Image 1 (tube, rainbow, N blue to C red):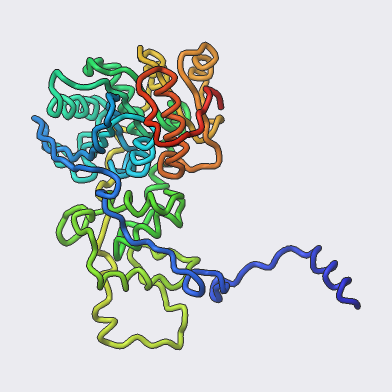
Image 2 (image 1 turned 180 degrees about the vertical axis):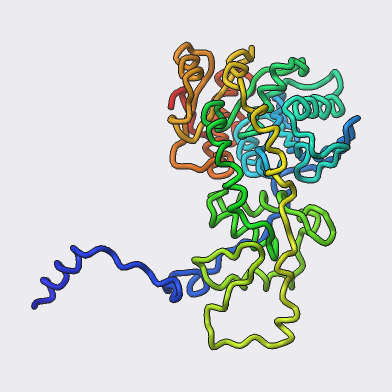
Length: 394
């Protein structure tokens, strides 16, 4: 049999399944080590502040004030995330638009501490946002654009309907629609149970975040994930441990099998069985259950329906210009489909992205929202560089 015949026969066969016990030369540990080290929030925000209200202390992050007058973008994260999920987006939007970004750790999340952490009702969360803005600005608040992702998007709609922010001029909702959100609630507990409950290091949490697909942008995961986990021993958010000391960089190299993510703090077996680990090294190994989630989302189930029920009509009833940014056109329910055809809001779809659209593709989301701001004459371009303007369409 000739070499050509062998190649032709081989091309008709299905590809061989790689053996996970023997990584390819291109896998991590053979050619290039992926950096899962956490990034400080200060690389993206100019200031962090603890805002005191009658309900507690709320952590907020701000970018620098623009040179020219511009609106205040008030950003609310999704359930389980933190204000740091807006880090890369804040940097990108500030490059192209004259504006200031204000990201808030919602009650029960991040470094916020309130009297009743478990009260995550839509009404309470919406009131929190109004109280934070009132504490910072009083009656002299600049023009406000509310921007929210997932649960945060629903809260933005509730805040707008309450009409408690007199300077509100616009609202942006990212990847949340009443119909699809309510349908997803039935499987939410199963999804939460599928996640690891603990992590042995911050780097391990960042790696899980990327490999599980929760966030597809590793740079965003490195700054965002530390805001979602707390140190079990100290009870403090892991961001309070940054920057990490030099010795901790060894921990990130201990993930041996690139095809396996250790869950519930289980240490993976060594990739090279013949390599022995000295006793003193094994004694110094990191605690396999050192970090856990900041919030137990499973306990907030009684509030889930209240976040999303009636959301589509409430969104349509908001009287300011609206933008709905989705990860897929199939997510649009009937009420919003009719409303979009009637021109009641601007719709934009960024396909081939995950649920955390603003983290996966922060530059493109900044371009979409920047176009929305310019189109409605809410802000001016910064002039630092040209950017792609997205017309209202999917």
